[in-house]
Amino acid sequence: MSTATVARAWTSAGAPRGRRARERRLRITPPPRGRARARARDDDDDDDDDGRPRVEDMTAREMREELRAFDLPTSGRKTSLVALLEKARAWADAGATPRAEWTREAAAERAMEDAARRAAEDRRMERRERRGYADAGGGRRGGGSVVETTRAVEAMKERGASEARREFVVQRAMSESGAGREGWFMLETAENREERAREMILALNGTKLTREQREPLVAWVPRVPRDNFYLTEEDTEGKSELELCQMVGEEDMAEMLQPGYVLVRCTLTQTLTDAFNDLWSVRGFATGGSSRFGKKSYEKLNQPLSMDDQIPRMIRKCVPVVKTDEQVKADEARVEVQEVARAGRQERDENDGDDLRPTSSSEVGAATSDRIEVHDGPFKGFKGFIVSENDDGSVEATLAIFGRDTNVTLTSDEYKCI
Figure 1 (cartoon, rainbow, N blue to C red):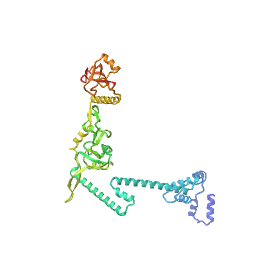
Figure 2 (spheres, rainbow, N blue to C red):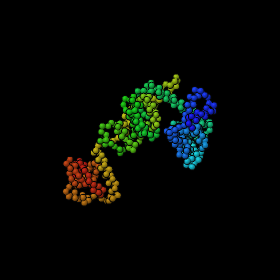
Figure 3 (cartoon, rainbow, N blue to C red):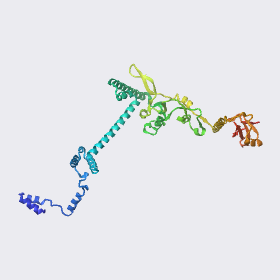
Figure 4 (cartoon, rainbow, N blue to C red):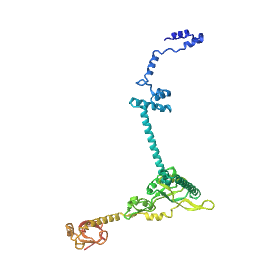
């Protein structure tokens, strides 16, 4: 329909006349032509292949109407409506019922939420049991009586109040005389968690929590080494006795000197005390002493105990044995002899050391060398023959040890010719 036709129809219908009416009639937009008609066709192509409009181009009202047709909920923001409508269309295209699929998905989400909530509850109860609240938690989970639960809750509150008073005393002691003290202190740890606590304490070095420290933190778990444990001179070169004690590992110890505790050398500050309390494996400082609290009563002053006077005694008890290379070789030779003796004990006959006849190799040595008897060292009491002499005065000898020839090196003061 042309603009003139529209104007005539409007005039014949009783449209207002005059200059303003003519201006309004001239402002009537004609139908699209040419490029405008092509753009309109392009807009029609934005629909889906099945003729449905794209979800992104729909209004919230249109989306709610389509969701209502799928029997799905229509509440929520537009972003949630868009996601739900896309799922509903995908379910419908796959031949499934959108309502049933949405119900199944909602049930799965609720199951996951319930599982996460139960896991969080279990972790919370586990933490409470570690902190000493097992009675209250057990009564609630086991369906205990109201009276028992009330008593447990009251006891828990009393313990909490005691902890609050203890923290107040600790802070008071730190502010009055404890802050700034430097030395060795004991930290209580969980059972069998001493090494883990030591690693976590040393990890604080270099952080902002230790900026007030004059020297890096030193943590030590005192262990008494077993009898056969030793260190070589090469391993101990340039190390102090404390560093030697720290080289005794869990597999090398005979016993733990202070089970459940870690010794720490540090400068006491409130920041460091709070950092220690935040460590999972640390329960706090070992404390002791007494101080006035209130007008008439005395309470334990929870001020960290200094262990400076006990450290030398602990080091003497825990320092391992240091052996020279010669001592190590002698020990290895002694062990070898013991193994040979243990193996040849079953083969031993009536001939002992005096009547022992040398084997063929010993006879070869006897043809050119002297027969000897060892009177000192790990091979004391055995007899044999000298094979060769070394430049340093020692000799290579073959000893008959329980029926077997064994090549050894002897110094001049360990044997005599017979």
